[in-house]
Image 1 (spheres, one colour):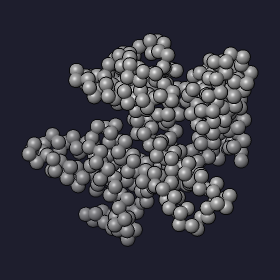
Image 2 (image 1 turned 45 degrees about the vertical axis):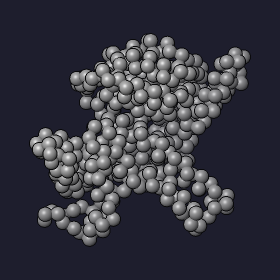
Image 3 (image 1 turned 180 degrees about the vertical axis):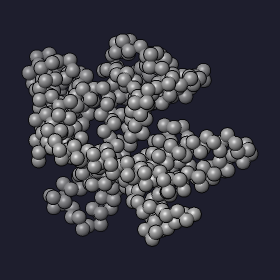
Image 4 (image 1 turned 90 degrees about the vertical axis):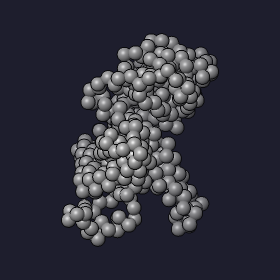
Length: 393
């Protein structure tokens, strides 16, 4: 694949660099937040041999496959070299479209760090069960700390991704949020500290999601305000200082506790639904994931899943459903590879099945499942049965 030429063609078909507000990628897709989705030439994009599928709901999602990182890098380099690219006036989005785009843009970049830490902790559990590495050893504990770090310092990671999405200074935003995890502050909070006669709520902000988001959202407003009114000669240090001494107290007194309660409420709501409907909810979600993933709408589940893992150490709805769907996709594709007499199709099904087994289902979805109704039905039924079983267990 000629990645540079592919990137150049994709840029042209999405309205050129000036139409791109924000660009990210996941395991197989380019995710573009565009100023005007109407400029996307979907039919021409789908005709490209390098493109496996296109979804234009909220974000423009272009399924590339294993070469997505190289195509992403090519597009970024082309955008950086495009001196004629000018930012277009922002088209007003509906609130739900804006919210979904905002959530995906914040949480999508976190996946590599969180997944890496999670896989490492899983490997450590297996090594301990096999008797090859005991929990009491310093080696185990150090490696476990590495796996724990992405979840514990999740507010800091979210501060960076939120600041990047809002196009504000990420280091100042990180500084504002990092105060919440400062050991000196946490000690003061436990002792019942006050700020200007106002009591500070003792909250553990480690592994929290919403406090960091609310903090950076407020910081973005203060940065804009102080950048506007501070003198140019003093702006380099005065605006960040004023933003910090405004944002951090408001976060401590209002936004932090509010965000903590929002996270607790969401977690309790999901747990209530799971407790009310039990394994049926997990099975139904698993059965619907082929369509949810194909539309790119599975990312909004990430805030709940990440918060639940951080607060309770487990997640009993989305992760089991996702695992059941992955296995169903893998099984269906491997079955197709065994039954098919077309050598090229057999190879596609085999590689897609292996990819799905390791959690990357887009090649299976766009290359096999959605193109063949019997395969789709078998995947849905298999995922529902597997999801229900895991939800019951």
